[in-house]
Image (tube, rainbow, N blue to C red; front, side):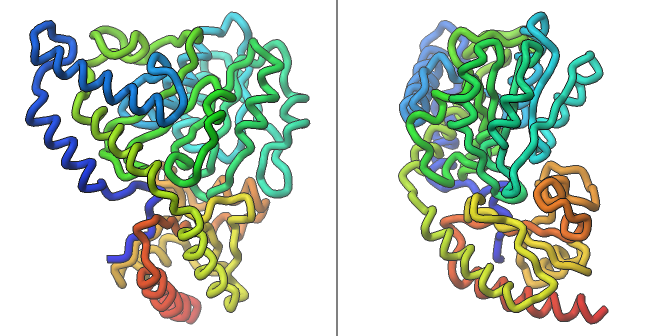
Length: 375
């Protein structure tokens, strides 16, 4: 099997799985219970939280555990908007966001909020001056992803955060799901945002656990009410084994500097695709090498996906959480080209990807391309 869909989800690291299994078997107490089994589970969670805080350079009190990035995004966006709606009902975002951003924004529009899309430059990055021109006293939140999941396009989050510090009534949220573990984020990254979301299964952790980093002093309207947990913002029995395993996954991925290696694999694919006049690379110089988006004009994305599947090779068309739209919104926002947006595929790489994997993919791609173009 050649797996090239790491941006959708990653395989669980065996050491992480071992931690999950060990904690599940040995720490059976509810962390909210007062007896020693409960206290042991609570202490383990506190230790894991301390480690996550140190790795991300945030405070332990700023960590809210969720079921994943989608819940974190919903909690951040709805939580801020509903808590601070007396300040204003305008929210700024981009046309490059994940569906778990657009979903809660659509819900808030029904409640009278206005959603504004900030202009992008020719490379798909936020135009800082244009963004600042949109900010007025009614803007309560700006939500911009750190890395787009289809293109790998990296936004200048630290610069945006510094800009927004001039507007203390406006909160800044970023979906950091696709950047954690892919490139070394600076120690100041989380200092420049008010809220940040991520999910463990994107960095070789287990599905079902994620985080929302929320700065102290900011209040949220919870999504889930009732039941004691690690914070007042997300009710429900804390998942001890998942929290411990996420801490382990984060620690392991932070030790793995794979940026240059993955970049070499990306370059190999790009150079190979140059021989095809009908293949256009959509990812640009501001994109992470872990995600390569390209369009094959005249070939439907799902047709190529299933053709490669016959060779036991797995890629993606759009984000795994996207609706089954024929056109990629992200590719169209960047290229303004209907044909490219309707024929794009995503190849996502990892430190686990080998040269042999890429060779196998390129051989199969050539065969599939020639067969499909002849039809």
